[in-house]
Length: 480
Image 1 (cartoon, helix red, strand yellow):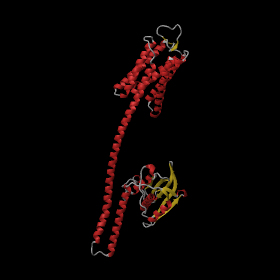
Image 2 (tube, rainbow, N blue to C red; image 1 turned 90 degrees about the vertical axis):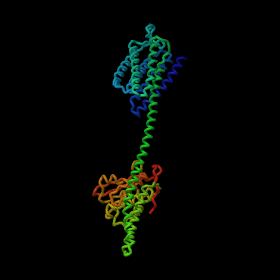
Image 3 (spheres, one colour; image 1 turned 60 degrees about the horizontal axis):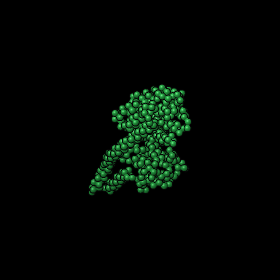
Image 4 (tube, one colour; image 1 turned 180 degrees about the horizontal axis):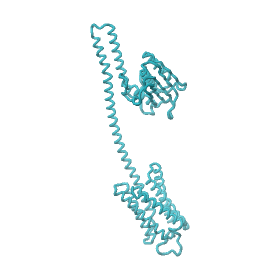
């Protein structure tokens, strides 16, 4: 009954050793942390040793090969613990680890050849060489191995104590566990040599050591989690401050654009009103001044509309729409601006797409207007509509190509930036608005241009409703 009880206790140690060892080895696959891998292997070796000892306790006969497995696993656990301490403490002596493994390999060979312990015989009484309670005899080489194991444990204590002195608080737990394990190891040595009476407490010391190291990693992870949380809060505050500064910068740019763009029309309107007050003004001159007032008022209205469109949130309301019908409306609206011609090619399977028609009409108007201005409203604009796929998204690509003067690489890279324009009367918001509308649909706007060869603006629109999934919502523009 006592043997079975001890075997049951050892089985509990087995579960702990194997569970902790497997956990640390799996963590190493993710974090690539050599100390964790070494400690995980150490725990697995202790698990093998505990299994062998439990089997020996309940065995009806003295199975020497079981004791050989237990001795080999114990030696491997000790050298792995020493290697862990070398890595954990960051000691410069970690290059000594291959020497320790080499010595352990020689002892393992001797163990397999019964050079460390062997079955006890009737004439092996005396001199403290016989482990009577397990009926094996320790050889002189076995005593040397025991002494080397004791040195390894003491070295482990020294390395961890050095880490503590260097301010590594996470080493306190492993140091305490290694001290307890070393004390129990020395106490068991005295029991084996017959100096004192008592039971073997080796599994208890090893269990304390394993739990102390595991707890040290848990505490370190808790501290890292706390530090990460603190850093996250600081980063969030810094991001808020950065966004606030960016908003202030954008407001400043917007104010400068608005002041510049409004001042000129207001000056023209003011001069026209002053001219209308003259009594000797002819009827044709009045008509000219009134036309100027209308044009400048429309210019101001367009500027304010662009600013509001860019600044306000917009919610797309996707529905099946005909791209060709929207293109025809866009082309019709440009007929009064100049003799611009259009060459349209469209795939039959890209005729309809799920999109907000009012927003897409705004996109097409802007792209065609840019192409027309680049060509001074003369020449041919090429528009190609085809089915496309980006990643897992299927949709439609609309490419608008002009034969204007084109843009260099620097201007092309900044073309979608708000408030950036190369035209004297531009606000720099057209492509910025287009880009936001396309992003709201989950699509992408790309611009390719070369000086002297013209510009191609390409829009990809996925054929689904991404508004709720993307999290950014836009309100539809009013229809024409």
